[in-house]
Image 1 (cartoon, rainbow, N blue to C red):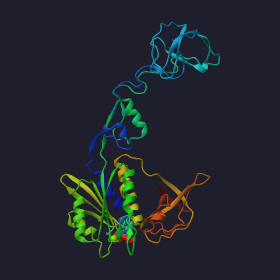
Image 2: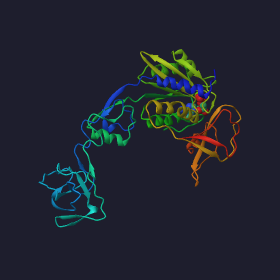
Image 3: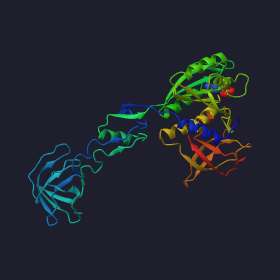
Image 4: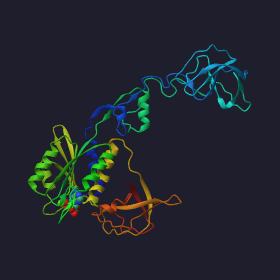
Length: 403
Ligand code: AMP
Ligand code: MG
């Protein structure tokens, strides 16, 4: 049952939307790149008092009066009261509380000061109410400062701080387990001999998970023995994880047991194999445990395939449900011919640049073999070569996903 990219995407997207996101409270200053699960309200008026927007003098406006006697000085955080009339002013600093009696601030650039006398310059703009930040003008008490579902950026932490919101309710990180399969795999700190290779794809996946502010759990390596796979995958499915990603063992090789093992353990297989390249052997299913449904991805072992699968099927959905900014997509002009003879959807690796005329150009003068991870690490985009596009030639416009 090989399905199209579009169908695969729809099935996976629906499954992600049904994930039951739970929430937790965390210190606000640890909430960068998390997603807010409540509205944050202002607990006070912001700003809490009328204050000066400039360094200058505070006065009570009277169109006829152009010079003042400076009665004193108020800086931010050091309010002092003075008895004032229309002919007097106080020297005031940015952020300092405005005396009740005053209604206008004249910036320092617009006056000449001589001793304790200030005179308005002829060039000055002189208007009632100028250069004042009114109490509550930013936000009134009990108004929403940061709405629910906001993906928190540095600026939102400042807003939370102003509202005295020391704890924020956010959606819990998804726990994503990554299990590598393959007799050939050895740990990174060992030197491969004979027919062994170092485990690599796990690290790209864990780093991607981390980048998405989710929790990646390295479940290690399991060899291609069916009993061992059964045992390790059962353990993973019954742990606290929300999503299981396995790599390897989903093709049609003699020792590719992963899909059978999923089925034997009760995973509801939604599809096996999508008409894409790389990453065709992907198997996707759901596993019900108690009242929780876990998503199960069996990705191919090829480092490029597993990472491309992750990009197009996992990252995009996490971005959506957590309201994160999505990967940028741009249309670019192909700089070399590409070989693509089938009707699969290809995600080829490319190098994207913006030329001097502001036009995006994409080239891929290197191997598109899905085994070449080091080549992939030079690429900065995935070129989407759609199903109907056969052997696109130089000059063709191609949609690219920046990675
Ligand atoms: P498989 O999907 O198990 O048929 O593996 C396809 C190719 O990817 C083989 O060349 C494997 O050696 C390689 N491979 C599988 N798993 C990994 C891994 N975790 N890290 C690096 N390469 C892998
Ligand atoms: Mg294998």
